[in-house]
Image 1 (cartoon, rainbow, N blue to C red):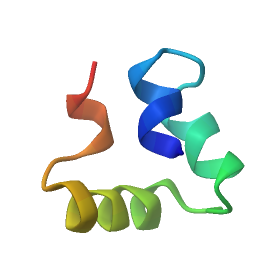
Image 2 (image 1 turned 120 degrees about the horizontal axis):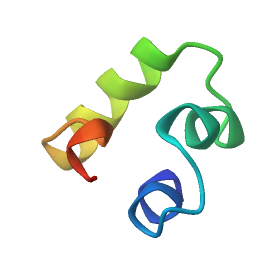
Image 3 (image 1 turned 120 degrees about the vertical axis):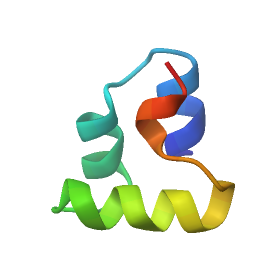
Image 4 (image 1 turned 60 degrees about the vertical axis):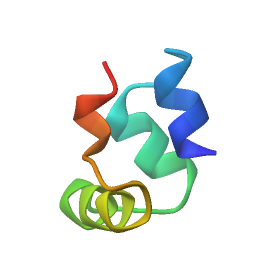
Amino acid sequence: MAHDLINNKKATVQEAAWQVGYDSLGSFSNAFEKKFGYRPSQIK
């Protein structure tokens, strides 16, 4: 869900993190990288 939000420019990385339940942007970014192999900021 977060990948879709960021990729389609419906949300910033921070907003996407909040929408999927992360309070910490760092924790979200680490979890995202584990799943997809790259950081959410690299989508843009």
